[in-house]
Image 1: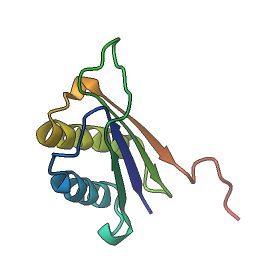
Image 2: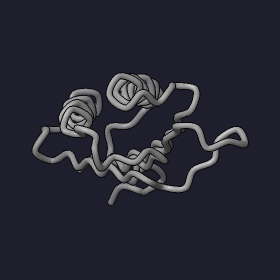
Image 3: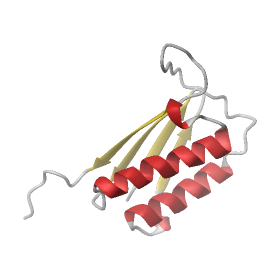
Image 4: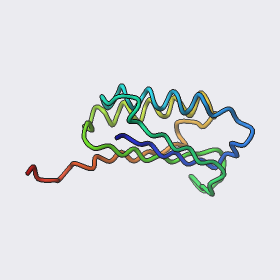
Length: 110
């Protein structure tokens, strides 16, 4: 089950976040190759984030998946999530950081 946890310093109370949820769900499913009904998206606002020494709009995300992650998938995830945040929350790509983690890497097959 792929999951993306997005934290931002923006106050999201008055923001329509539905497009972020739907677009992130579709993106993770298509890029990682899993069905949408298995994708989880968590979006948390008003998180204390300082980036480059200031508190202008910024975001941090973690993508976790059981398989399906390689170098090309990471690149696509980073680019696509950056576009989603820039288009829907006006967070510049230069103020977005993402960690992509595959839980099966390093596990021996039994």
